[in-house]
Length: 278
Image 1 (spheres, one colour):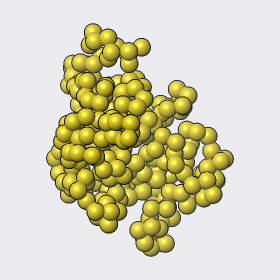
Image 2 (cartoon, rainbow, N blue to C red):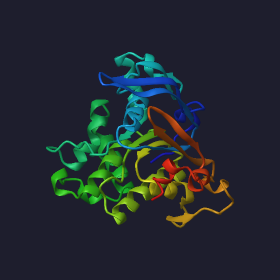
Image 3 (cartoon, one colour):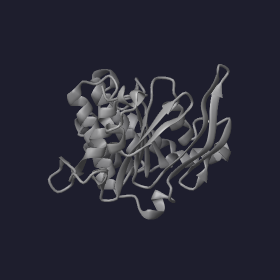
Image 4 (cartoon, helix red, strand yellow):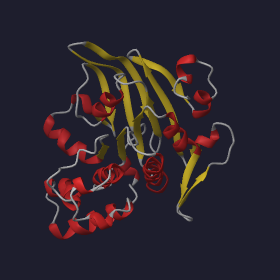
């Protein structure tokens, strides 16, 4: 995979939500949410089920439009774009769905190549690019297998490979480790660390697992040893390695209940935040 250039990675901040309201017939889910994500930053979205984490990802990808407010991604005001403009915009965004969202009737290679074929990429370019991203997630041997032949963790890794096929500067992860055993979950976290630390990918990651956020904040992927290693411990500076920073944002009752550094949430005495530490 090639490293995204400054131009490909877009503007700073990479993502801006400004006074965003979003809801349905039952009422608003998000009420006036405002935050920013800088280039190469990983923002961990925490919150109980139904607090708007997945809605946030879908709005960032242009899959949903807020009722009010602005969503700006890579310099594009996504909330004001036409569908024809959104189709081109979404090629710059990788989205890893919790359920994988693979096509059951297609083998792994075709699932991963799907976006390339939609974009009219020449056939001679498709196979090497598919092999490249499958090699990245260590699943090159599954090219001809159907999703039904894969474990849950392997499906999640294929979903990551498909999200990476266009070398996006931003990847959105919807509960990427949910339902996985600890060893498989660690494999997924390692992939996310590699993307951040080797390729400079900006990420929004929605989860209910605080330990995933701490793993991203307190460890980094060393490209020389090809291993995940602990950061040097210097307070909150431990969450910033080679310009890649990890922060937390906690939703509650339609708004942002907490936004801050890993050390702040880890040391908080707030009863609601401590529920995520248990």
